[in-house]
Image 1 (cartoon, rainbow, N blue to C red):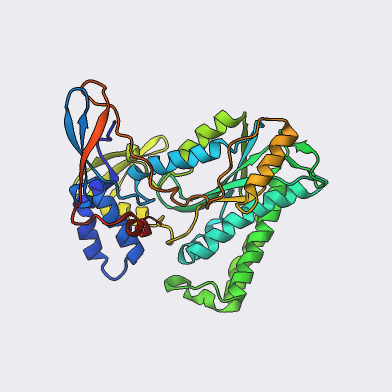
Image 2 (cartoon, rainbow, N blue to C red):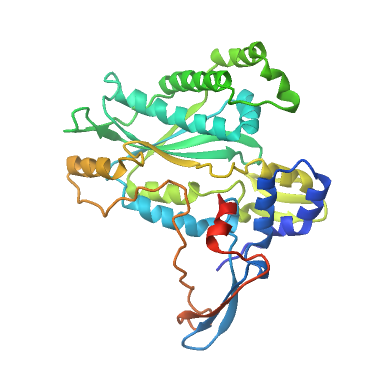
Length: 389
């Protein structure tokens, strides 16, 4: 298996302890757990197992993964299981790809109120799409939406935005017809205005309900007049909504989902160099070199609250009725019924994946687990999973 020359774990192992000490009292328990998990991922601290080839007797030791969802090395297995479930749900129609971005002026509020504002961002984006689609002036159909939250830009700064995947059509109000969308159905200007209204309305409702909290340089927003004044300029500007070229069909959408759904703030493949003071990484078409302390700070900006689901389904795809609605869609599209659709939470861990060792590096034979062993930090799966949420 290809291993990048430099990994995020290498940065944290070499400099994480010093960074925590320098920022003592200012790092949340959730962030400390993420750092510790990544530092110990696939090391003897978490235990592991011994594999032996059944043909040539080649033996090797493999250490356990931390399974934390912020770890670049641990997302492939979770993504594979999630994608296998989603593959059975894809419909044989084109798919739209839209991106809703939170204005920078709200970014600081979102960072101090992650669960509430990120959830509102996901909901407002999905509600914008389902509302426009349900309007007879536009489509007059019930559609499905898969929304994926990303909180970073290429430079690792805080940049919350939602990627939405939408099939190009939906079910008619009477449930008897599939209504197909035209290629240019979702107009960014129309979406932008409704998205703006829904999100600002949601923010005001959350503020009135006492669900938003402000600290440090935002403490002044605790006053109602100051909060209203901060939002006022946002009502007069255009909010960014980007409609990308539609996907051609299920194969193209699966390739996209494989890259985006379980992505973390920075992939190991983007890391280039690490010395005693700086980290270098690829940022679009250039190389960024920043101080180690700043790199770690930026990475931790994107640690999500425990239990927060950043992949969510709405409309036809909502968990409560997804299987039934997809069965109706397939019937209307006259396609073969798929296997029973899962009705689980979207980015919950799909369970402990069955371990299938890769082929023997010497002869290509089958590797077999001979024994397992624990480590000083290894714990039962149901306990370890709490740190992965």
